[in-house]
Length: 488
Image (cartoon, rainbow, N blue to C red; front, side, top):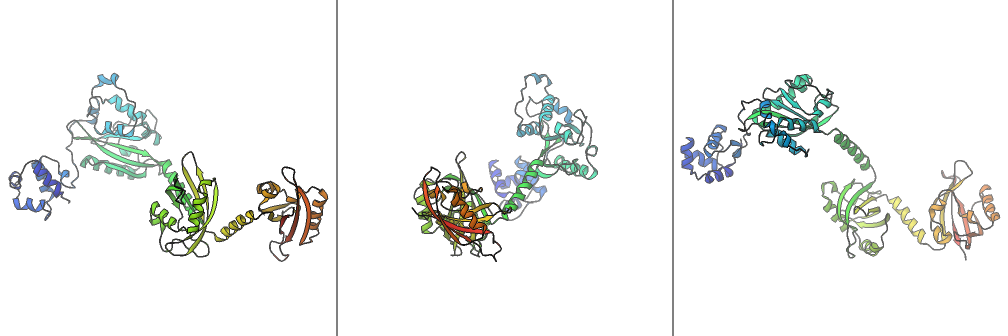
């Protein structure tokens, strides 16, 4: 039993009662009241009720005793039949669940509540609702109640009990729960479980409230079940997706708001969401060390990550801030403020301009980062195209797997060649192309050949091409590589 001593003292003084005066009213010793008020002892439930009566309050205002209501002598069916003659002046547009609850919890509180209005609410509510009297006999139910139990819309529930709708255990559980509300007047709020009568195929959020008459006496109980089956199914799917994402060697993040400061390296203002932040980099270099970032809030994660930026990284981010194009990929190194180790990452970033959101992925795969960095380096080397390719399964077609810097020489993007087209297809003289093909067919590697190509705009350029083949003993023996050097 918990006694709210401070609130008791405030209410006693509000009533302008001294401890001596309260002692006389309750026939409780002055010493006992003083001990209770000073927290040196706790009164019994009987004494708390005596104190509450003297202060003209209910016991739960000064203790954790549940609020209790006297039982109404009126039938709940009589309470709903009020002011029938005013039904034509009523207009009900708001189907908000709070409006429904206020009508049901205090049926006779407003003189505009009628039986017809109550029925209209129940018929139009998407939630499962029912109204029972003190004997736990059903009075009214919503259409959704009937629908979820596969009962016809004209089914008469009046006088029915839980055993008419549910199997024995479910009927008993519902009966005892409603009895608790009817006995104590204490509502039950948002308990999630399977909806009775659905063979555990539907899931609901259960709330139950006492129905009071105009004298504030309990006359019945209202049950409200919000069908959250779809929500639960969605939650399961989200958990499955999150698990799948957590198995990736990547961090996925979501952020909001452009950081417009040209003196700060960060792109966004606020980190909203991250997943799989504990993914360790390949090679054993771990940014987070012994700290689990899942125990941190998003602001702390962002601050620790930013504090790991090296000066070169900061300088690069600030310089390129005005020239950003999305989607973008960037590679950079950090010094972990936790492990003091250097960590390299590759980060792919996109920006949703309409909603002001950034999305990104961070990978710690060192081999991938090295390859990506090499690609960037090769794309910056002038006058040379580096390539890797394979003979396809049909033994006739050759395709590039990697190309660098094609645009500066051929005026075509790399993507133009990755669907089966070749640099030698641009040869001005068809004989030159056939010569190179013959070298391939006769397996004469390595070899070099010089020829002219025609660019996208028709310009003629001279190339000297070098062709190599991965060693015959290699598992990738059908892989070739080389480079095309611009010589004019």
